[in-house]
Length: 188
Image (tube, rainbow, N blue to C red; front, side, top):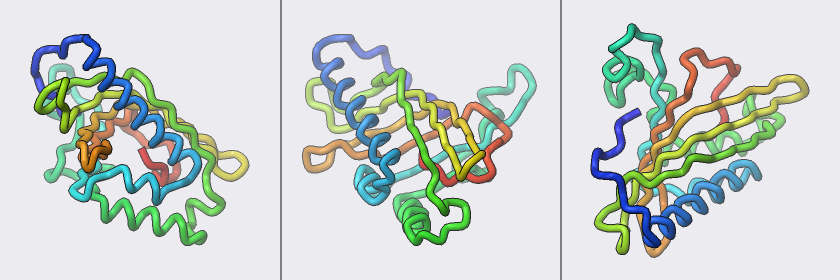
């Protein structure tokens, strides 16, 4: 995972907890939209210049984790390296009703936890952007017998646009290096 900005720990004051509550509500609402299959409304939570990135994890020798464990954005092959347009095309494909790996649609449950604000621009009392770290657990059930779990970490860059928070960047770190699911049709 790209390291979050290395600023000092943000003070734990009322401004921090108010902003943390806003971040949590944003992430929880996003999870609900996905679980209810409101994919088009989910897309509205992203900025037009979105970066949606999930590297592939590799098993590496001790001491090489920071340099080699994750594939690199714009340099290596990744599970996802998308923008808002490609995400919208994935949504359109699923919504046709003839998507081979999503017919019938999966039942999915997103759980989000360990939400922390790691950076705020320009300040806690007047934020226009914030970097939010979280953990996720996603359960997917396909047809009768296929069940998959996805567990990992996310780093989101939320930006205020027209008084509303939107996600400008999502980095997803899946805590497995071999994908056990038959496909990657869930959204993270």
